[in-house]
Image 1 (cartoon, rainbow, N blue to C red):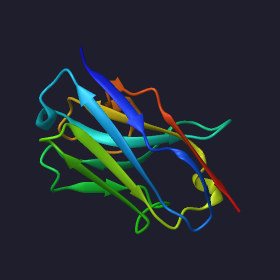
Image 2: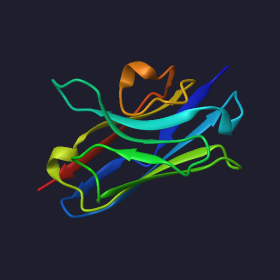
Image 3: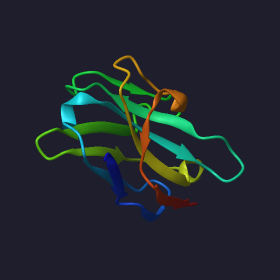
Length: 124
């Protein structure tokens, strides 16, 4: 059974940093492409960043490019999202997800497994 568990969310002032982690189990870590998504109140879930199975290729939403960094450690079965220069508009619940589609990027519909989410709140 595939399980994804996010951690590392919290409250921070604008300009600050947070590092999210996603521990996963139930499958070989290098099998799935993985991504981070977020959903703010009243808005649709959107893709933030995605990473290939090897970790060599990454994709970012325009709104976070240059501020967020996605990475993975397949030996530790863990996905990360380093978030720097945070803005109030980054406030949302952040989810990690895994996809069996080797070409999946930032579209939520392309992902098969989801974590429960972790809240990130950025104050001005």
